[in-house]
Image (tube, rainbow, N blue to C red):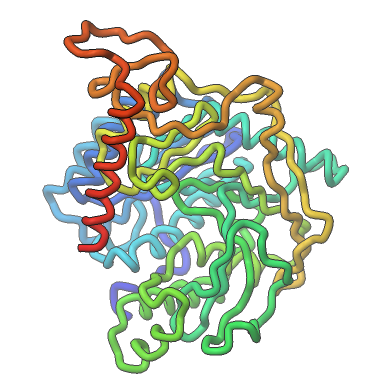
Length: 424
């Protein structure tokens, strides 16, 4: 596999931190221009010192073997000191790179943050409200202690949960389902997926932002998991005739061996000795363009995570400014867990828990997603469902609040443009 081969114990540049933190979050990034713009905007907004959380260490994580001499990563690291460089190839393809980064980041975090409770992974095209995420993580752990009636720290995979199977021929996901919609335990081969050799179903947390217990992460640093990641990296760029034929049987022939799904596969086939939990944080705290057809920001006052799938860094600034005015969070987390546990392919028992919206209602914190158009275009008005309920703060040469008819016409126009672009 050449450059795709992984080191058994990859090196990283982070110093050892012995203090007991709640979590360390690695933001996967590259030396591309759009990643540079995202990092710059993040440091000005949600990663500014005033927006951080003391118990959550955040670092950009980049592969540096073979990195070009003039890469902006070198200067950024000197100026900001917020990078972790890992010894993995910087020249891997888009489908291979995140897999190599995941393997190296898990090793790095376990070794350099030995007393930290949770490992986090995020993409660089996100906006995260770190203090509220910290509170949600603590609340989720407290709830699991209460539900399991244990004093020690419970193990969990925290994030927006979805489910897949893992096809061992193509090394790709197959058989998608939402959250906990499936009603089966893990099978080494699901007979319902007749044309693939698929292990599952299992949960995974969407890779835009997820956290997993360090106790679980340590169990994943095995030769078997390394071999599967290497096999997925090799399969990711394969264009052989047998691979093309195998891909045609998948539910989504264009699927890639996404690192968040592979992490879910590793947890359900490797962790055998612990009672753990999948914690679905719910879409009321998660926003991305798919949920609002690409129109506006799609934020709610309750939003903790915005995934900027359109890769437009200016959206991060708009989203952060809107969230500073309107974000709210309840004082506690309430989890509702399914009565029947999930039994993994490794024989472990997992609870399937969903964060309730009831604490938000009790705290008068809205979970209603708004399109949240930029105020430079629309201004703001109390009665518009598309704009924040605050007065217009600029001199207006036209009405700050568009009429409902104008608003609907503009939305329809933008949707037509979007649909035409997709069809094209």
